[in-house]
Length: 160
Image (tube, rainbow, N blue to C red; front, side, top):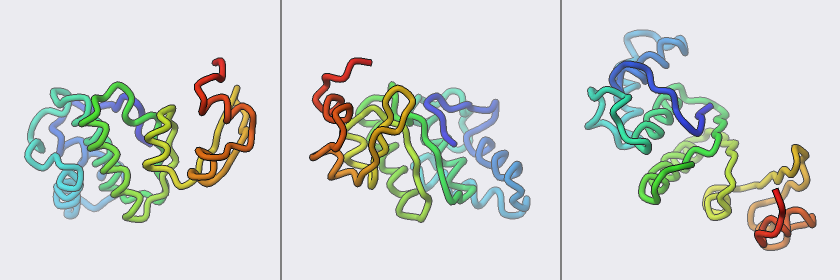
């Protein structure tokens, strides 16, 4: 799982990934190489030795995704992974999410960003007041919502 605000350990960027691999039971002989590969995949290879906590918000989020990538999960849960990020950082995070998906990881993501849901989503599950109201392929949901609540949300009229 990757949270909206990633938790960075008091280690270097690569040290954060190596520690995750250690906790994941990856043999020590493989950790450094897998960590370096994960940093490369998210575009942080040049920042591997920098302290994780001095990285920008977007870089920290990419580092959190690198920790996950290195573990090669079957399913990844994301809680608004681009909240509070600028458009450039958002684009970078979305690229990493898409690459994880292409690599075979099933992504389950919470977002309020309709554009992001359209760009990244295959299927949308719409929740309202803690209840699943609608589940549909992304294109159909965005063009022809089946529920009144979803239609109101898409029009910006649903009161929260």
